[in-house]
Length: 275
Length: 297
Image 1 (cartoon, each protein chain N blue to C red):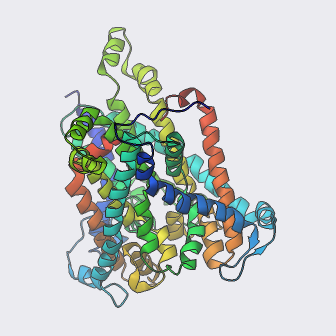
Image 2: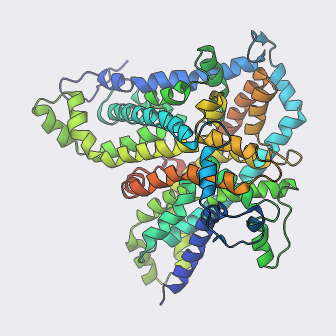
Image 3: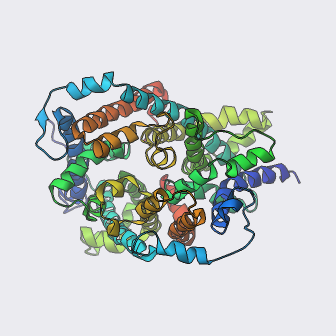
């Protein structure tokens, strides 16, 4: 039983980490009074109708509409991010070319660039192009390997694939792109999964970019509709409704993380990237 | 000039790689270089976001330096960063050391510790946090159970800042994962040898583990400083920057100047100055930890 103190310590930590989330789910069933009377997360009664009310939101559209909006951003963004990062990483990992070191340094530099600095000029740029209030400012940058971290992670992985694979494939007549698609891409599948999962999670979490770029309510992604609902709560407002909306809003992220967890963790452990 | 040899497979020219990284080159020019230059140029103008910008030289920059709002925001942002980052590094390192133990069920603990950080700045989490700290909310109830007086979380600047610090501290999982990976790379033989030499556990942590974690600690430090300095969504949603601008970060200032007061020229000047500030801090960190830098990247 030498391990007992360690287990106790870890369990105490785990409770701190997970309790707020349990509380959130429990509070979605609680009346305003109950929220403020008991720290225990299990509610006195389960009334699922709050979720039906939350689903309707405070706008003419249901949560389903905003989920759809979010996925209209996430799906192209994920596809773009995977394709562009793989191509760029392949270039860095497998080829020699002029100014390679400079470009790689710039790539690493973008990882340390605070988003808040570029967001204002980009907003003006997209507005001037007439693309404000469309999803293009949210998705198109991903087509250009906008996340340096993804490229960096992929380069590390490409380097782990033996060069002999390339030589053998080239002898058999593979071109540059065939080599990537048929030989290398399958070797780095776990990273590709990680990139897709990260793009999903980060897009679900992103608040500033849609806040600035999207102005009409019917185009809002989930984060903005949550903000709108939270802002429109007044005195006597049923708090569990906005809490239930938050729970619904967290489900996609938790589901994706749970589904991809194994592959995802193996991807980040080797690549050194994290949320 | 010496002609450089490009080591490429037979039949592959020196421009093939360049062609493959074209998306990055275009993206860098359009989404990083251009905004960076534009923000400096617009910072030199009087601009409301709609009408033609009018060149006014460095007026925005001098205004900024003498503005009490900007000074306050800079002080708040730095204070927040200095409080949060050391705490977060310490907690994530401690958690990583505990989670590095090879005991049964450790994977479950790792996942649980990591979950808050993947939900990260998800707005649902921010809203949840706001509820946890409302007067009479869960935080106050727990303090009551422990026999402590309740805190006026939203009433004072430091209380409000503590709410945000606790939120971001709770999300230490990403830093923890980096530490955990680095810990896994330390060969177990080091500890065995230390044990033979009579070195205790605490001692070997300070003499073996910490020195070997130099690189990853630095990486975490830089990443966390950058993330903390641009904090926006938590103060925006939870405290509104208040009370008395006690949580009014530079991120909020830039947003407000641009979208609430339509001072696009001024907002860009602040953005640019802020970038310089962050870069300056990162360079100082690099200089201070110079000895370790050779190992980095």
